[in-house]
Image (tube, rainbow, N blue to C red; front, side):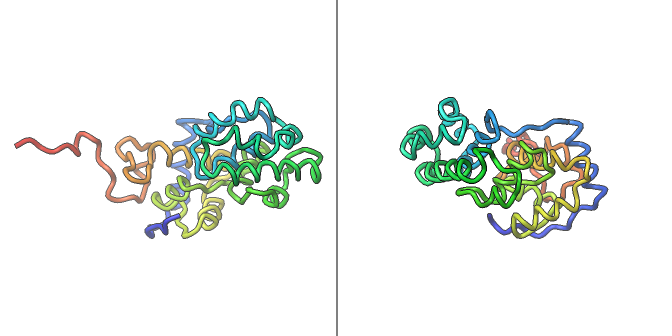
Amino acid sequence: MVPPKKVKALSRADAEAIFSRFHEIEPEPRGELDYVNAFTLLVAVVLSAQATDAGVNKATKKLFALAPSPAAMVALGVEGIEDHIKTIGLFRGKARNVFALSQILIDQHGGEVPEARDALEALPGVGRKTANVVLNIWFKQPTIAVDTHLFRVGNRTGLAPGKTPLEVEKALHKKVPARFMLHAHHWLILHGRYICKARKPECWRCPIAQWCRFEPKTPPPNTLLPKHV
């Protein structure tokens, strides 16, 4: 992730206003990965590294129909998994990780996805971000998964300035009101994906622009057109 430009952190009152606005717009935000149970959620998140959710969903539709459990996934073998995820970036390494984590779930966790962070992060291909997604979505824990979108939004807006994903995550845990914590990372990721974009943020339609520290804010498209003489 690119080191962010330093901005002044927003106040707790501003953070309260921002998440209140997000809640007004979408009280129950959802992630965009498709899954049918805790295991397929875990696999989908592992596969989503450096890939789009839409691309992962397309590849996993048939995969999850055939292998919705660790035992079924192991039965496919690495090559069988590869055959279904060839359209996803880094598919060979991801296939090996999915096979290996499935075997570990069988051997060490009775075929179930563990609820403990340490156990999740010990699985092949699973880092802190992936563990946070699973803990949040499936186990309803108030974790925050910092991807590139959330990292950008946290720094650009002033909500949670930080040089690393972990710094941003810790800053958000201090800043986000407790009642909004469960959905905080979904709101911020979706905001970064569709409005606060990397190259040209759509500030003219941003619902939290009045509190955001980003300057200069991008004007509406019609003001970017050349003026006729």
